Each structure stands twice: as structure tokens, then as C-alpha cells.
Amino acid sequence: MKFFSLFTKAPQHQRFAYKPRFYDAQKEELEERESRIKRELERERGVLLETPGNYRTRIAGSFQAARKRSKPAAEPNAAMIRLTILLFLTLFIIAFLQWGQPALYLLILFVPFYFFLKFRRR
Image (cartoon, rainbow, N blue to C red):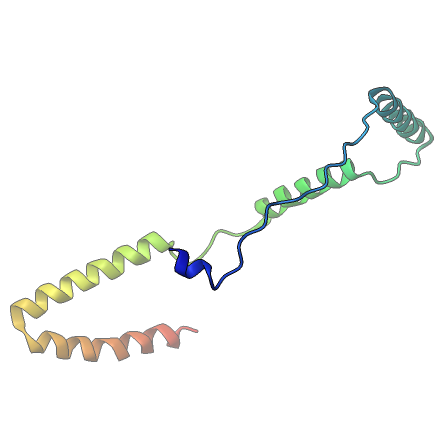
């Protein structure tokens, strides 16, 4: 295994600079109280500015409203399509084993007819 390491660089050890942050719990609490009091005063005056918390509630509400307005999908779900294709292939294999090449010819005639009916509706 030494042979491969001759052509590649040896990995260097990881270096990272850890700079500890200073956390002042009292200052954090004071800033939170000040911002809460300012919001209450603005609410009393009737001048409430948009805050990030308000965006969240508006966004969540708009998603719920859109879900209520949306129509159910008109096309069948994917599981039903897969089941139909699986059933069709199974029946084709049984017909091919039973009748041979005439089943293959019927399939060749059926595929263009199916596409004609499918695209005629659109």
C-alpha cells in the first residue's frame, strides 16, 4: 500500500482557530425586555412594525389558505398507474404464452390506438 502513497500528498493535520465568545446573560435579558416593551408601546400607539415573528404567522397562514383553495388532482395517483401497467404487462405475458405471436401483433396495433385516444382528448 505504500506504493500508492508515493504519488499522492500525505494528509495534513487539521488546524482550526477556536475563538470563544463572551455571553452576558444579563445583557441578553435586558435587550429582550427592551424590545418587548418597545413592541408593546408601538402596539398601544397603533404603529406596529413588521417583525420576523409576524412574517412566520403570515407565511403559515397563507400556506393553509392555499391548501384549502387548491383543487384535488384530476389525474389518478401514481400507485394506480403502476398497478394498471403491472396488470397490463401480466396479461400480455399470459396472452403471449397462450397464443404466441398474434398477441404481439395485437399489442403493436393497440399501442398507436391508445396514443391516438390519449392525445385526441387534449
